[in-house]
Image 1 (tube, rainbow, N blue to C red):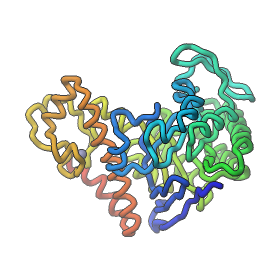
Image 2: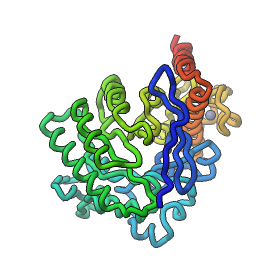
Image 3: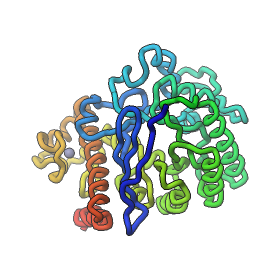
Length: 374
Ligand SMILES: [Zn+2]
């Protein structure tokens, strides 16, 4: 039996922001939460122990990638994803829907599912709602996502209508295939593109089926930030209060803060890890590109306000040296700092919600950035 449960602990009085707690069979998750992305059963350049030290409560893994390589059946034979990658806290797996559309070649969508060719070797596959759930269960996922179509932006309204209805039918098939005694929770994904009436319709379709949590999909797909915020602001309050709300693939530190203010509990994004490997580092006063010549002899820590291992022990000059010399340690240290920054931001948000000063926290966050710019 699933012990999955969401408890709303505090509702902010000035915004939609909420402090909550998710219980899973692999432990509790304090929300709002940021989930580092471990696409191929690894959060790139990070040891699981380090992920825990910096406060990661749950990580995300990728159905599409693990299905193609090394294969979900092999992972299952080897004891499941948690054992395979030495991570004993919760794992959320995405359904593969997004990657089929962004990475797979020669896609063809039918009512059954999506046919595509592997981006690795060109082999042909059909991913269906049933197969997606089967893969996620074989991996041992704690939170399984329904298989859906992530619509590009912009898209013709007629296409968005068809796609949203099909994704709702696929979501129902995912619900039906998940065994009733499963310890895994199943989340529905709200689609509807940027059309608010279709978002509302999608929410209604999903609520009728019933899920342990609800996600907003199809955001951060090239739309303007204001449009993304409007879609969150409209859609999130339509979701049940007693279920976690997850905005998929979002985003920058600003996006996280604004997402929380609009009622979101869960986030994931490759940005802190991918940017780290490209030398883009997040600090309390804005972004830094560590390769810049101005840091060549800079003895200061990356972010004097940051208490992470990297900022306590290394200078900007050293980090620049590692990066420009193409050293492996650059990825390790930069990723550790960026993820720490994200986890500290979420911890700060949770604390502010508990203290009842989220509005103040939000304006302080922006004020610090203005100081640097002015
Ligand atoms: Zn740091």
